[in-house]
Length: 63
Image (tube, rainbow, N blue to C red; front, side, top):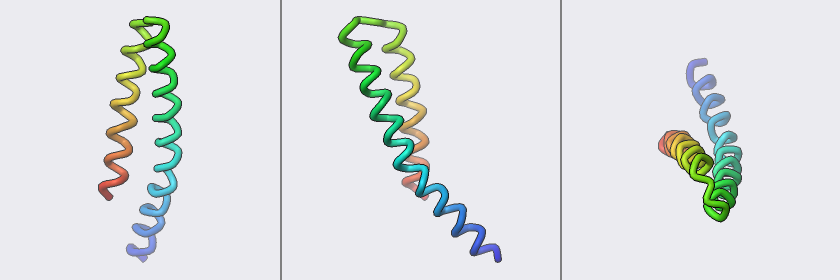
């Protein structure tokens, strides 16, 4: 039973990967727009969010 639960958990984590990649793509677009407009506040926010998303993605890929 324990193995089944672990496998289900792994499968759910694999399903999160495309969602996180889409979030990264969206945030990269937001960052690009902020760079064009020289919006320093949004640049900082986007970079911070990208750092968090990157960590999440790496954690999922390591499993």
